[in-house]
Length: 320
Ligand code: C5P
Picture 1 (spheres, helix red, strand yellow):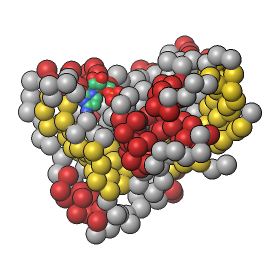
Picture 2: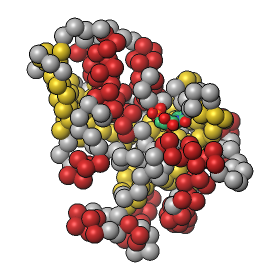
Picture 3: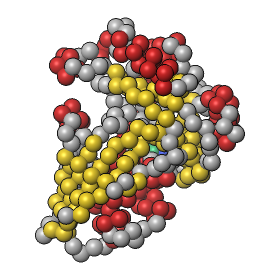
Picture 4: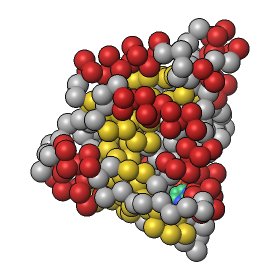
């Protein structure tokens, strides 16, 4: 069996705007994507077999319940899409060991980046027949964020999010990635709720953010950050607004939701400030009280999933 190890970074949407509903049911968006140092790892093993076999192994007991471990997972979809594209007559047995660090159902593209990593691993098994643009085209056929997850770094995303313009940015930011552990938001639900939302939502100033990123001016970049999903998702989950207020009160430079949420990213001056905020948020009885379910108490994990990460220039990639 041949084995390939891939690393798959999470993404943030530094800005996120919805520009209208399309005839195909999707929405046109304009977003500034940023890959970050929070990464999943996939150990992919593959050999020829009489029939197609696919299995994901994931050691984490809580995650096992949250994600499908068969080929209905986006990783399995990526494997099948690649094999179909190659029109191969052979069958394969594929085993994926998944070390999941990116929270699930979080707006961090955890599923899409794993799928991007799987496409890269499959491509390597077959001797790299597809270039990056071809992998991105294949990825876009089953997930709007997959092309960016293959690209990495900083990009403007348009169309469904799959049309990318690379931004050469040297601005390195440090983030607290904060997600109430028991709360997940479905992306189709969020788009529908946005369409039905009664109030006018001001768009982010993505021009300002782009100029700030290009000139490595943090203040200007941050001034343009924003996400039109935020009021929609906060209306359904007011505890998120409370959490954002708390993160800002503790000294974060800015705090916004990524994608369709519910994860918040708070921009901080560095790891020290990040650790200070972490200690405060994880100890504060008033924040997250509503998530202290029996299950969380039994698992003995904090109700808030809190991670520190930095801007990254990497997309999904092979490490060995
Ligand atoms: O492409 P992806 O699988 O991430 O999309 C999930 C769902 O989110 C789509 O089925 C669609 O309902 C919604 N979506 C959208 N417009 C986009 C991206 C996603 O309406 N640009």
